[in-house]
Each structure stands twice: as C-alpha cells, then as structure tokens.
Length: 323
View (tube, rainbow, N blue to C red):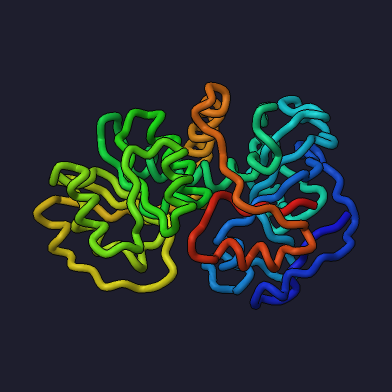
C-alpha cells in the first residue's frame, strides 16, 4: 500500500509518499481500507517535533479516517467486513491513517451513516470529538447559556456551532473572512462577527445585552485569551482548544467573575469520556443535527500541501487526504 512516512522531524517536505507492506489485523484488531484521512493542526506539531508526545521516526502520521472494514482478527464481534466506518486513532498510534490501510482496535471504530461521506467522516474522530469535549465535558455548557466559538469556521469550530445549537445554547461565532462568516451562519450561529474587525468584541458584548458570554471555545488563545476574559459573564469559562504561543493576560479579569480558564486535549480523554462522546456524536449523526463540513481535499501524495493548508489563516472546514 501507499503511505506517508516521516523519517525525521521538520517542515512539510519531510512527508514522503512510500510503498510499504499491507498490514494484517491480529487477534482483536480491525483492518480498515482508508477512503479519506483527516489532517489536523496537531499533525503538523508532531511532524515538526514541537509536540509533547513524539514518535520515534519513521512513523505514519494521522489520527482519523473513514473507510470500509477490510477484515477483522480473531475474537472481533462488534465490527464486520464491509461496514462503513470512521476511526479515531490506530492500534499502533504511530502507524496512522495517512495510508491506504490502517489497523485499529474495535473501540476505535464507529459506524458511519450513509448520508455522511468518507471525507466528512474524517472530521468525526478529532474535530467533532474535540468540539463535543470542549463544549460539554470540559466547558460544561448548558441549554440557555451563551457560548462564543472564537474561530468558528474550521473543523472544530463548525462542529461546535452545530452541537451547541442542537443542545439549546445561544451561539455566537467569529471568523476572519466573508466566506468564513457565511459558513458560520449556515451552521446555525445566532450571531456572527468578524474577529479581524476593530471593535468586534464590543459587538459581541452588545449581542449579549451587556451580560457577557457563559462559555468561550477558543481556537487561538495566543491571540484572544485576554479579550475572552473581558467578555465572560459571571462564572464564565474559557476552554483553550488551540494555542500557538505565549500571551499576557490580566488575572484580575477572572477574580471578580470567579471565571475559569480550562485546558483540554483529546489525548487526555479517558476511555469512559470517549465512549460517552462518541455515543453522543453517533446520535447527532443519526438525528441530523451534526453534518461535518469539508474544506479542501488533497491526494495523499500532496500531504505537504495539506499540512500547509491546515495552518493557514482563515480556516474553512476540514482538510482531507484521499489515498
């Protein structure tokens, strides 16, 4: 099969398309034929050697994909060959999804409804799961609260808007381009603002009637965190989903409000957390309240271009590789 392998940490150019042996599922494992693989910002941090968890090269990147079950190993009864599935991670996390085939554990494999394309399915394992965890497991968002999705046009952001709206929250979304703003509106946000416009935080506060927001889902804390704290209502929470550097904040902005800054990463989710959130995502797919948004698709051979695209400003939906 074809796979992307990284032999040394570095820029996008270290992503090499190579021919490697087809993997076989062992006992208790599932072999999935990858029809689409998801590209996430964390993939670029790992590739650059800038992430806390580092593989020993060579490794195959990628943590999410969608495809067809090719075969199952002895003892697997929950998954059958021929099933449409999405996957989150691989049995060996460093033999990932940027490949024609991937071996997973059964608990990493989930049904993919017919109405969801394989490209859309790549958004379920990381972006949609991240959005759900940020909103409800870490941020404890509740119906009737106001949530600001700060950077709502990317894979995580569009999912967060859909999931929050379906749960009964009032949703404010931001984006940095006309195209992104329109996308956020289409996902169901009640209010949409351009975070590149001067005074946009005043517009957000006005949209809340001056009380502020209960929850912020933050994709770029290195830019926005101090502003987020000023926008919070009493007992408000900021969940930091994305960050690319340091920022100076005024802690006094948390004190009188008894506000909280909450970190999160999908890698820290417990098995119980993952079981719960994927059950919720499955129901959201079934009842039509969650439909992942695909931004751009690239051939597997163009993984380097995909890594550049996922880090560009003005994120728009999910970046996908097609083997």
